[in-house]
Image (cartoon, rainbow, N blue to C red):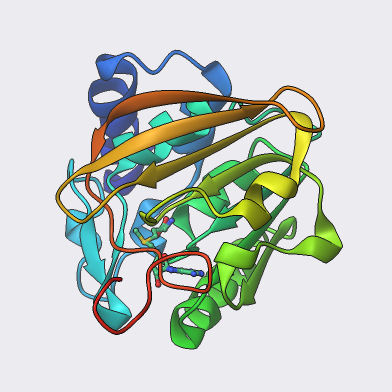
Length: 220
Ligand code: SAM
């Protein structure tokens, strides 16, 4: 018999994800597996399957389930891939990606969030998810190239370091723009020097703060 949380998870995928046009069967399957109630803030488990982003520690958020699914589908994450996520937050998106890809490296600038996310991965035995603390705008050059890169915070532009670390044939998905005027972008690397840029829909994310993002003192 399914638990209440499992029932809510299946309903979330049917209504919020498949019901809104996400077609990638691997994404739907992964979201049916990962228990979002493990990733929300303690005491907020009952809200885990709401159609919304929720607050987590350090004034950050766990993204809305639909946007997590839409970004993974847009990035065309596939079995065998090495993936980079910038902005691990709670670790939820990384856990979903880990159900599809071979290996996922997720960077978080807040040590506390990275620590909590790593603990969740250990508890769930998600051994192919590696969480690190640092400035994700610089990527992880030692682990590059990546078949897919997902950025879960909005920057002024796509960090050059991330474009460089994208494999040829790979896709990078990230929100770009000022707070209040952000749009999701899909960047596909066609060759060593050629990238295709495709604007997707308007979105709302916390700022990407770092050397190749916004500066901490006043988003400039
Ligand atoms: N993917 C997350 C999840 O599933 O819970 C949600 C991420 S939250 C919307 C964005 C995260 O990006 C925040 O936790 C924030 O601290 C982090 N962040 C912002 N700038 C960053 C940077 N330069 N490097 C790494 N993390 C960053």
